[in-house]
Length: 275
Image (cartoon, rainbow, N blue to C red):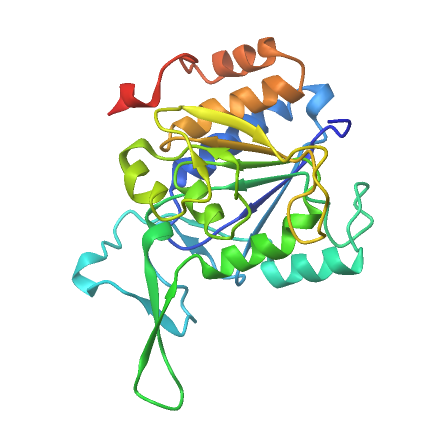
């Protein structure tokens, strides 16, 4: 693609997998130390400005609870990430054209979306209705899915999913017909839920794209947008190393970054090796 990707966007939800987020972002952090990629930026968003927990713990002001017995939620060793903006803020700015590469807009454009997985991708929230005593169950990732659907036509370069982040994205319908992989241990459960996706078993990472001759409908990903997906958790390191190799100077860039991390990058390992 002609555009070189520099502006990354990370949407979060309660119960995201920490390494799904931290590993790709640390690779980007390393690359910002090099002159040719020092312009990399990151925007972190969520449904609200409350800290987002890696454990299934609702924000303090949430009017819902997880569909889990309280005794099953271990709140020990809980990490949180503070978002910079809300999903609504971002979508409003995109629709109003208030984004700019030079920082003169409210936000940077979305070149690359990074979508993590985690236990939160398979949990429900329980809401109490205001008029009755009935409870309503909603997917924990419904707000993220709505954000992805709204943001899809504004993504300029790529989507990167880590672990069950591909399952989250598949539920929006935006992966229809695409070749995608996911967490190997959860492959069967994920693949049977969205049969319109061409799920690929035993792949550490996978690269696909929206056909360049596809006709844009103004609602989905644009023609030529790349779809990068990866298997469970640590595969997020591999897919990001492959991504930066593809777009920032070749395999030497990935190898150099892996060495800086003291990470043994075994590119040919199949996902089943880790089961």
